[in-house]
Image (cartoon, rainbow, N blue to C red; front, side, top):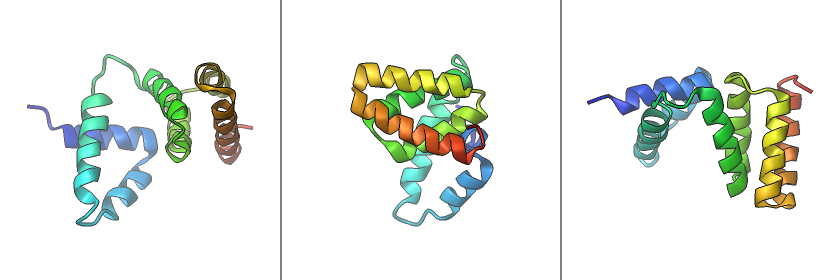
Length: 125
């Protein structure tokens, strides 16, 4: 059987950056380590490890879903990852428009603010 934790660590590092993932995993303690390992294996190993959907499309899907849930810290993290996975500024803007249409303008505004912050920090605006 495939090692989902190993695959998950690889996929997570490819999208979020090796430094970020190493810091997160290294700072995990007895309380948080089981969650970090399970989340990495399930989300990143099982989910992102399925090659049927490419990383760019998966990033776009994640931005839409996480934005709809209003989890803005995670949205910013995945916005950076989406840029690394090949999403353009225009595609991120279009995703924010979809969030506003289907999840409400206030949530779209939150995503627009977060997108602007990330895009400015990454030198894209």
